Amino acid sequence: MAQKPFEPDDPMTPTAAHVPLPDRASVCEMAACFAQEYLQMGWSEAAVLEFFRNPFYRGTHQIYAALGPADTQASIRVAAQREQERRRR
Image (tube, rainbow, N blue to C red; front, side):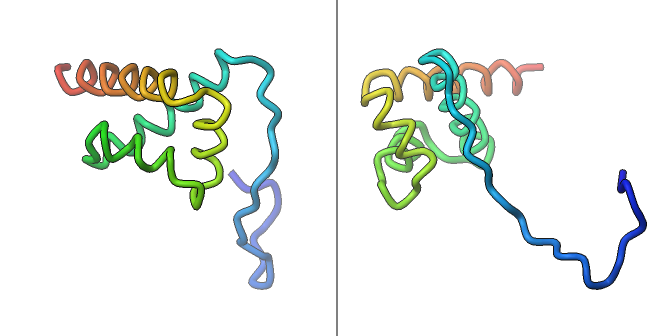
């Protein structure tokens, strides 16, 4: 809900904020969240991993750099398992 009335000249520009990641578990969870979103759009696990590897996509690539290939792939697997469980329901 809006806290004030909408005005025609209000900017509706999305803004990003840097949120420091306190520990490795948080980075793994963030990787799984990104991956789950792309898996829900129909991407394969291999395609999602390539997305993390590509430095053009700074957010996911930063996670890839922090976790390394093996842990990034493990986080994607966790997301894929969650997605499979969700689809079974």
